[in-house]
Image 1 (cartoon, rainbow, N blue to C red):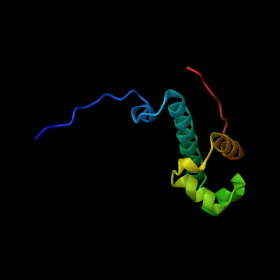
Image 2: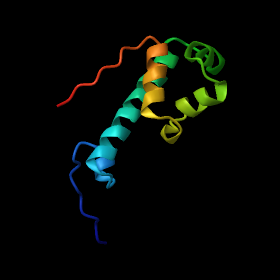
Image 3: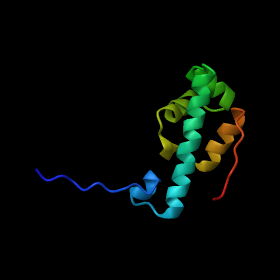
Length: 94
């Protein structure tokens, strides 16, 4: 049986999937913000309705957030939601 070759990761799943460096950077930022928002909701024990109230969005949008539907959120919106949740958002260029 032939084995598929193992390809070492670049360290960014989006780059590995063939996105341009610019797209991969934006997608990574969005994914990271979504993960932190999900952590915040879980740590605070918020229901989706409570999270919606704190974040100033509808419950269905919170559902999209916790289910990882990153395509439904712009980077701007995720920064706004993180700030509303009391998280500090910083950009570090490397």
